[in-house]
Length: 79
Image (tube, rainbow, N blue to C red; front, side):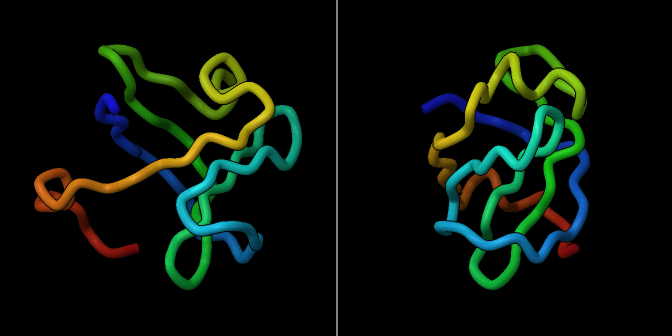
């Protein structure tokens, strides 16, 4: 797959399958992590930046599975 960069996210306790995008409402998308979840606020994908209000253009009804490559985690900071 192509790299997706999470520029801004907030903590969430929503459930779901780890790594899967879940649509909560029109502008709220949650990704389940190992123990909790993050709410996507701003992401970068294919040279475009998507804010929370634009995520539906990218994820639609949700259900996509996100994975991580160890090379992309080197600049990550813990939440």
